[in-house]
Every structure is written in structure tokens, then in C-alpha cells.
Length: 241
Ligand SMILES: C[S@@+](CC[C@H](N)C(=O)[O-])C[C@H]1O[C@@H](n2cnc3c(N)ncnc32)[C@H](O)[C@@H]1O
Image (cartoon, rainbow, N blue to C red; front, side, top):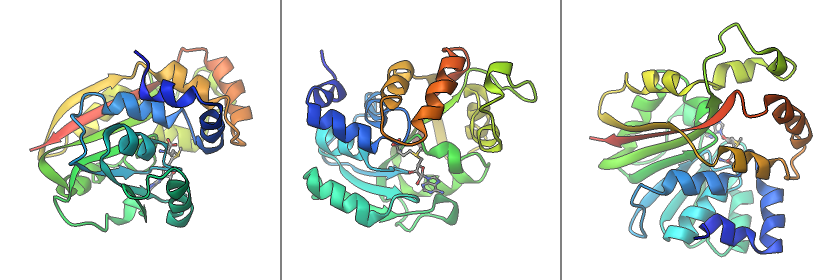
């Protein structure tokens, strides 16, 4: 059966929309896999943290009719509001400015689900980030994150094929499933449910490499060299207890 993402991409105007708004591996496809086993429904209030241009927000509002606080640092709420109006999801999707490193401007236990696609690795690599997010999620709710990562920790032995592309930001943000699991296991008040490599990695990357974003040209060269050997997408899900 076709996924929501496949049905969306069947229309040429939607493919053009996606090409114009992707900021990394196709966030709609990644969000669909991340959301698949979370029991999302229309009664839920979700924080989409680091939503970028709102592709994951579009999935959560259209596929599940959930209410979504679409929070981002680089993309302004005004820009996202305009996009949400054009997509006719502005009754469900509320754009907000958030810098997760400065704390969240929400009530405690406000969200049924904290959801984040291709963003958490930018701000979540410290031992105090997850404990700081947990109080905003209801007891019994989940924190679900999908991030680009590595099949194994490179340490100082960055593979030769990757060295031309490697930089300090990649060194800080890209890690193995085991590295993230060890970090999340330090946090009290959660039960870790899932740490795994995501099945949509190859397709989500292929779709990103068709996008209009200026960094795509460099990423095409990098992914030719990478050739399926080093990168993955990592899914982390924890229940707040
Ligand atoms: C690669 S983009 C991905 C955007 C979107 N999730 C997607 O997949 O298309 C990374 C996103 O992380 C967000 N981000 C980075 N640091 C952040 C922070 N401290 N607080 C909130 N969002 C942050 C950026 O604003 C950016 O939109």
C-alpha cells in the first residue's frame, strides 16, 4: 500500500513543493516512519521541534489531524505561517520561534508527543538537553527523534573517502546508535523504547538529492563517496514515565 508520502509525491505540484522546501533527507518520509508506531491521533498536541519548513508538520496534521506546535530556530514563524496557510493546515499547525538551547516557552506536561526530524543532533548532543525536555511531555507521552548519524563512531579515524567533506559540525553532531543510546540512558524519568537504524534512509537521501537547496550539489558528491557505507538515520523513542 502506498504511504502518505508516496501519495503526496504522486502529484507534480507536490513534488515541486517538496524540492523547494526540503532541508535534508526527505523529512516527510522520515516523519512518516518515525510516527508509524506512536499511536498518533487527532486528539494529540505535538511539539514538532526543529520543524524547518514544516514537512513533518504537514505529515502530522494531514495524516493524523493532530494539533502541532511547529517550532524552529532558523525558519521564522511568519514564513512558516504563510506556508501553512497555503497548505490549508493553519488551523492545526501553529508556527513558533524556539531555540531549544535556551529552554522551551511552554507549560510543563503540555505535549502528548515531542517529535523531531533531522534537528535534534544540532542541539541534543549534551547530557542536559533531554532532561530539560522531559517535563514538557505528559506522563505516558513520548519523545521521538529521527537524526542523521553514523553506522559506527569514527573517532579520529575518519574514513579517507569522507575526509574531504568532514568538518567540526559533523564531528560534533553525527554519532552512532550506541552513542545516542548511552546519552539517553543517563536521563531519569523516561523508559527508552527504541534505538534503531531507519529503513527509509536510502530513499529519503535520494529524494533530498533531487532538491533545490544550494547545498545539494556538495551532498551529491559526498553521497557518491559514501556509497551506503557510513551514514544512517537513527530513530530514538522514549516514553515519559
Ligand atoms: C537540517 S534542518 C531540518 C529541518 C526539518 N526538520 C527538515 O527535516 O526538513 C535542521 C533544523 O534544526 C533547527 N534547529 C537547529 N538548532 C535548533 C535549536 N537550538 N532550536 C530549535 N531548532 C533548531 C533549525 O532551525 C533547522 O530548521
